[in-house]
Image 1: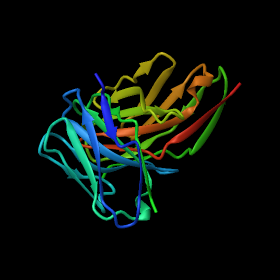
Image 2: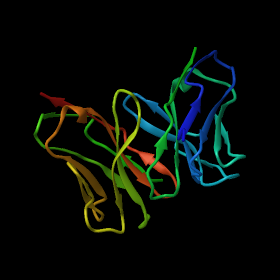
Image 3: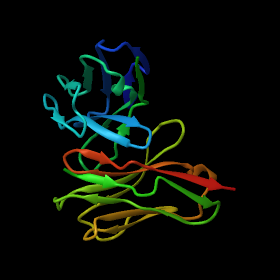
Image 4: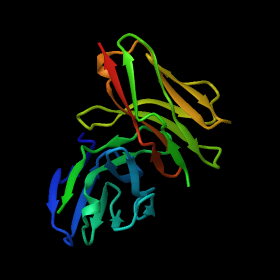
Length: 112
Length: 111
C-alpha cells in the first residue's frame, strides 16, 4: 500500500516550458487536491476533484490545469511555466469530507 | 469563499509546559469539518486531531485537545506536556467540499 505518490520529486523548468505533475493514490479515495506551499503562506488550494471525471477551481487556479480521468490519478499541468510558480507542490486525497487527508511527499519545482 | 486564519506565525513553549495555537475561520456553511495537521521538517503532513462541526464536545487525542467555539468560528489547539518532538509547523484546516488551510504556526519547543 503506497498511499499517495507524486511524480516527480524535483524539477527545474525554464520560463515558458510546460510540464505535468502526477498524483497517484491506491486507497480508493474520492477526493483529491493539489496545493502549493510557499513560505509564510501555508498550503493554498490550486484545484480539487470530488470524484472521477470532476474538477473544480481552488484559491489559486490561474496558470494551472488539472484532469482526473481515472479515480486513482490526479494530474496537474503547467502550460507555460512562470517564475511565480516556483514552489513546493503537494497532492492530497481523502475518502470523504470528514476523513483524514493523506499527502504525497511533495514536488519541489523551480522555474528559472 | 471559506478562509482560515492563523494569527500566530511563531510560538515557543518550554518542554513539559502547555501551549495553545489559535485558528479562526470564515464560512456560511453549517456542516463542515476542522483539522489540525503537523508538518515536521521532513515535510510530511501528519493529522493531529479532527473535529466535526455538528459535535459540541471538544475533540481530544492524548496530549492534544481543541477548543471549538462554533459561534465564534474559532478552533484552537492545546498541546499539554509539550515534548521536543512536537516542534513543527502546525496547520489548521477547514473542510466542506474542498479543504482550505491556514498560513501555519511554527512551534518551537525549548528544552
